[in-house]
Length: 115
Length: 115
Image (cartoon, rainbow over the protein chains, first blue to last red):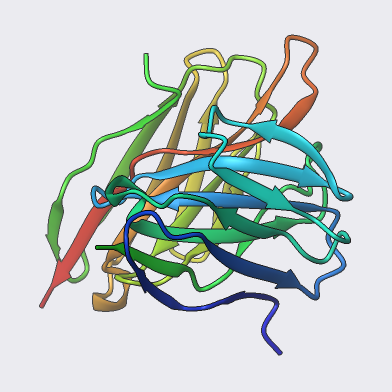
């Protein structure tokens, strides 16, 4: 059973389009994250959610809108895609967002290419 | 100062060598720390948590120096399978030491172990 699963694995789309990436975790974790890994391989946090509530938004453009229908899901919708959005997007989850139980488990990533 | 800073390497070592990675972090109130590894085109995976007194897991030893805001990872008897990018991760906290969901990654250190 995949603990954190993302779909799709690959996404190729044109500039200006709107796309969504879905993420689900079956670990019973309360906290979920979205990260962006750019071409230089730097993993940058975008959003953190705890029990469906947004707790961190790292100055991400408002073209990016996360949605958490329940604590097991955190989807990412991107409007008006730009070339600079091309990257690998990772979803992750952790038991909690504080204390020692914050080790995160990652999905396999979604490789987004904007052309 | 970068939030989490690592020497990007690359480190090229022969099998059996001992190699050490260092990491510094800017948030002095941080309470939890981790090392992850990431293989090429894969998701990051937890290698080990880092505890205040230092901890060991087989060939891997992690150390934390809170006063210097410094974390290290030592790998003994390197194997070919240790080739990967090693990521230092810090769970940032506010002045009171409470984490606020910002699990922050360093840029990673590339390790190549050769025969």
